[in-house]
Image (cartoon, rainbow, N blue to C red; front, side, top):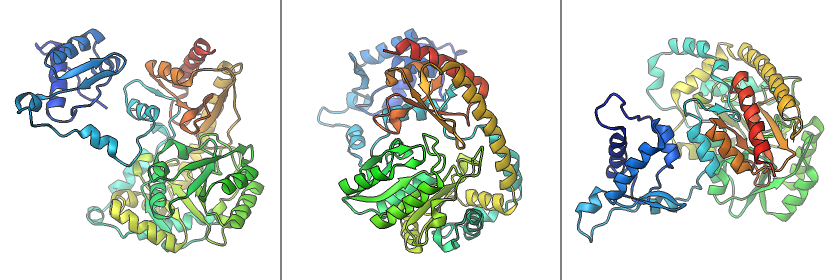
Length: 482
């Protein structure tokens, strides 16, 4: 994300300021040889100037032999000051080769674009999986921080995380029938870190995991980067299809099942109570551990959902993931893993090797959040607000998408999984939308074959902005349909 803007009050022409800025990026090594510059449209938008101004600046840099434009291939850095003054035998390091050689897989290009665009001024985020800022507990957090003694932030915590916080979480999950001690809990920086630890700490090679289709797990590169393939299992209205699970496990050497049984991401499906019992029984027969990602549990809008899978786990076969991100604040970066003690010890050891423990400040806030009884009144209020927003989103879809899409009414969570009934090139729809300052989450982020689906969220963006977005999306879908 670029925060620099040319100074319009300066006597130096805008194109010269931009030229100097880009040249500095190249000379300083921030944009080394081989770096592909953003498109002229992106640069113009970022610097808030006309494209003609960008063209003049880039032409000047090309005349210096610093950048080169390729037809259809964008503009690339080919030289810098060091190259120009050094002897011919001397060369700068090719950082692009190092970047490409890294073992961790890059995000999908669309996700990279979303991650950058989310913070652009004026963007409307229709698929963002977090609460809007107006739904976050600003006053409660301020009150907690005002009470905080400074000495608690100055040292490291123990490998498993703050002891008092783990005690609070053990008490918190009892309401759903999960009984565990603080020794069976690991504090992490959210479910993504938990999955990273599991990927490198628990799975032998070769092995694979199975997950619902479509699934959030495909939108991150945690298991893929660890060399662990993901195999998809079909879903119906009650959750994961157990016959397909049986067939998939028989075909591949599977190490575990990853599931979001409660308000599934991205489809919003709520796994039925009977399907939960059957899934646990089947995985016990297959000797297949389960990762239960339960971060949306508290966000029920109509009825209280069935108890977690973990509540029925009498054999220690289920690893349970929870988080503060969806129900309170994503910026707090506090989540937890509940699992048998040997698993927690293993994951805690790896965590100490990677970050030496989660933030003391965040853990203190989370501890006081539960200890001072802030949680229950806040989550009740959040449910009320999300219920209103969900119903408003459903009205918008009925108004604009009735003739071009199908969807189910979610009973909780953040998402509505919209399945287009007309054929539309989804990548083009994404690009048209982003040019209009609208961000969508295409279905192919969660399953390669989900090329006609969109994940919409009613949790982040205001209803007024959603109305504008849905109307424009309908316009683009009609324009692009085949």
